[in-house]
Image (tube, rainbow, N blue to C red):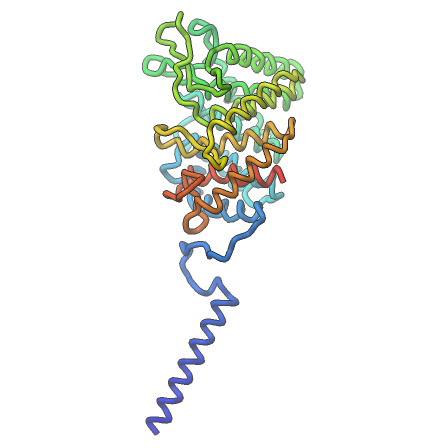
Amino acid sequence: MKNVLKKIRNQFALLCGLTILVMMAFCPNTASSSTEAAAPATNDPSNYSQRATYGIERLQSWYLQDTGLYQKPTDWWNSANAITVLVDYSRATHSTQYLSTVANTFGKASKAYGVVNFSNDSNDDEGWWALAWIDAYDLTKTPGYLAMAQTIFADMTTQWDTTTCGGGVWWSKDLKHSAYKNAVTNELFLEIAASLANRVTDRTRKAEYLSWAQKEWKWFSASGMINSDNLVNDGLNATNPAACTSNKQATWTYNQGVVLGGLAELYKADHDASLLSKAETMADATMTKMVTATGVLEEPRGGGPDLPQFKGIFLRNLVRLNRVATRTKYKTFADTNAESIWRNDQGANYQFGDQWQGPFDSGDGTRQTSALDALIAAVEMQ
């Protein structure tokens, strides 16, 4: 009798084991209860929209509902870029899933960060938020988003100064410690002004915004920050006001990107074809001189914790340029970078790292947002 019972138990155990294997094969979600399980190696969609969807879901695991911001090390201005990515993803995939998240951030983030109307001492920080709300307005037509962008821009105009270097916006309101005129702050100013000129309906305000955009581009293009390689150095040597020359600091990829979006918007406002010609020249310089041997965008070293954010901003603005000056080479570039991120820079749970050519280093909201800019660019240029 004992031998019979033992045989029955063995057969039952074998049956249970086979049942578990069948469940794992046909019901993969039951194979593990852990939400942190690695992405299945066989789950490799060729569709960029699906890849972006997986990436967005992972990004939102770092989102803090009570503040409307993202977990550290993702900072204040990086969260603005993350919200922009949510909006761009929603547009590219025709999804409404994350619009409530955008609204939540609009209502909570300023108070959580301790500022009013998304404005703080760093003029570039508030510029990113202005662009985020312009993007959100374009998708949802919510008037409050556009009004907020106008409020932020009005604050930035108080930082325009002609005493030092003949014009331009200061990087910081704290001139005692940070008297610096740099590229990204002025590029943001250009893009916001031109974007508002293209969106407001009041003729007086439209003319005012267009005047600011044209004034900014006239100053910026002659400032010396655009070097002989058609790449943008970080800022100006302004300690001696008479000397205002390029400081020849690194040509960060986001400085190559924001100007493309600004020129595309200004072209839509005043139809000056020379703007597109200049933008294409600068885009070409970036795609040939700031890449690996396989054509993957690469950042100069030494940019600190903000560095992982930069590359995605270039791809996002290449999309903006492509909308008004479509080029096959832009699509090819976006595809090359999106494919490399997916193949070479992916960790567990669809996390993406800093080096798009690989290997994967670590994941956080900043790295994820930047990589998603590239994936979404590939979706938009399909």
